[in-house]
Image 1: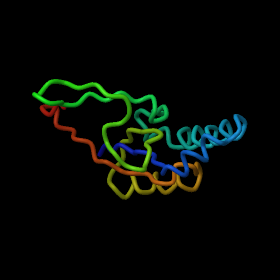
Image 2: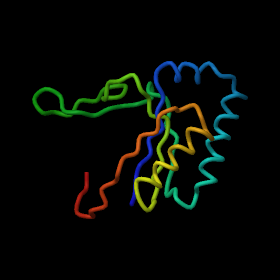
Image 3: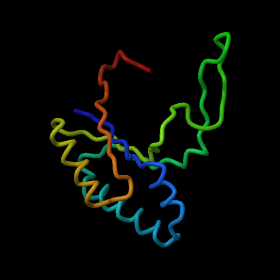
Length: 124
């Protein structure tokens, strides 16, 4: 099965990240890279994401016309800092990876596990 892991942090953790020295940030990125390397046989793709202030959203505005706005469309206090597409046998194996992340690469303290739709007829 394929899953998408979302590496999430709350607003306080994001602020703490931004206050880190360049050296401390590099160390945390190295921890994340090590986790990705350790699990490379199960990870199909992974990406880090820029901070929320860099996001542009397109959604339906008044009259059904596309409206472009700065910032994320979804409202919440959590931030997604990165994603990884994994291929594993089942949810238990995905949970194992997520738990390993929280131990090996702390900083984004929540990992959401989203099953991916593998029906080739479904295109979003």
